[in-house]
Image (tube, rainbow, N blue to C red; front, side, top):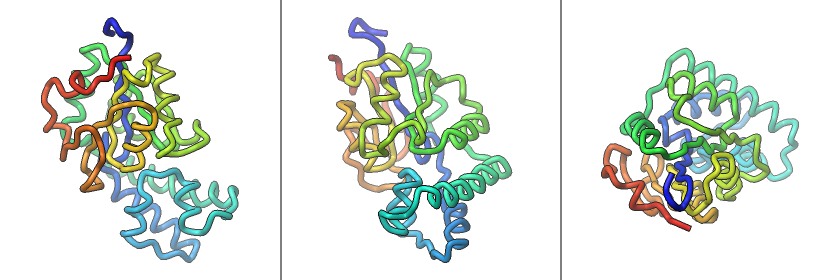
Length: 220
């Protein structure tokens, strides 16, 4: 905590804490094949990191019924979690070091993800990093997905930090836009996208200098 109040880092999950894109790809391809929809890698990449209602309405049209979103999305997420638990996942380079360093330095930390809560719980459990986070905000808990800033503003409120004292770590353009719309600085990790309009971009978090978060912090 500084004289200006609590500082917080708000973490996206997929593509930021870990690279689980292959598991998502396999689960979506299987789920959509059951619906007669042939998912392409290009379309998958374009919608990766968005909420299931947004993804499925991109594929099937804006009028795709909510009960169908729930049915198809539930199958997909179940298959995704089964793969995660059966095959395991690894944190991306630099993640564990920064989680530990930020905690030691008194930063509050939260997961702010479009993923369902069951997915988040599964990932944090398999990676063994639950204890680093003071709050979790999942896709079900906000009305609007990224690039709307709601998920970040909700996470900031839960850890008691003003938006100007929050830094977002993201891998997707929509997430970076949402962070800036929330009045926060953003670090972009180029896991899934080569170009990100973040305040700082890196290939992996290992590339960040030791004072990276301090330098980015916006004081009220």
